[in-house]
Image (cartoon, rainbow, N blue to C red; front, side, top):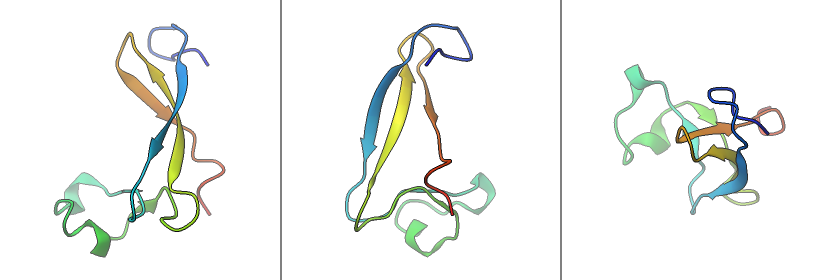
Length: 73
């Protein structure tokens, strides 16, 4: 995949989670990592089965792209 910001080749890799699901919480509702398990957000992983995300990383601009098409319900 080419980076949409600088057009350089991106590297494919993974972000692995631990026993908790990874989720995105909007900034206005974020109360820190300790309280994040009680916040509603966009769940990115399942902590029991597939607690990893496939990610593309651009070393040039230090940006990551996560395709959630297969992850979101």
